[in-house]
Amino acid sequence: MNKTLASKFQLKLLSVVLALFPISALLPCDRYDAIPFKKGDHSSKDTSFLEFKTKLEKAIQTKDVQFIASISDPEISFAFEEGSMGKKKFLKSWNLDKNPKVSLFWEEFAKMIPLGYAVDNDGLWTVPYFFSNHPDTIDPYSDSLVIGERVNIRELPDKNAKVLTQISWEFVKNIYDQTSGQEKKKAGEPCIWKKVCLPSGQIGYVCDQYLRSPFSYRAGFLKKQNKWQMVFFTTGSD
Image 1 (cartoon, rainbow, N blue to C red):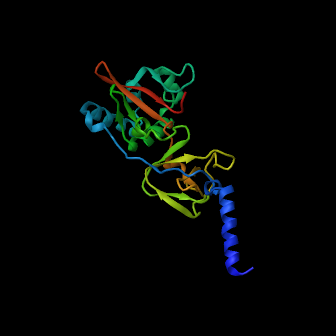
Image 2: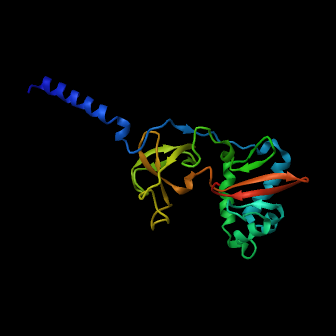
Image 3: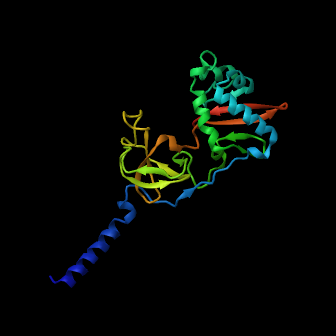
């Protein structure tokens, strides 16, 4: 077989393979259009809320449990299970009633603060901003937001692995399988690695502190009788 015939045969074979197995089927995960996210914060729209927010963030920093108790609504919701409402139960669930200084509440709330606050038409304020302002094109059950600038997406769950790309404030698709990541941080690693699908169809790994689901912890605030109240602090969905 001469070179011309060989080339024609190879092209023909390639066309048959592509017909049977489209490029998308050969990729580790399905391609999709990139979903960028524009950060926001409505705090400056309401001087009353801005003043409250300043006090709240100081209380988080200093672990002021008395302030948190004072702003917790009598019917605050803190989970989606039955019986997960009420100030007393909320404080107990976070160990804020007996040993507040070691409660994980402070850490979880502090993670939300840099992500901004949003207000809806009914006067409900929520944090983080993207909980109530994410694009309609995402699936909050399977997509998560990369939070940060030029976040490394690595080929393997290893701090020394090849960087596939860098992403700034963009939604990616979570991958849940037996190889999707670790339950705990491994020795020598800076984080727990999360497995994600990129718009290119590649699979990569991102540090958990740079990845946040719309259903991660969020808080809501309403002004009742001229006083700001935290009406929910919860994670997950019903």
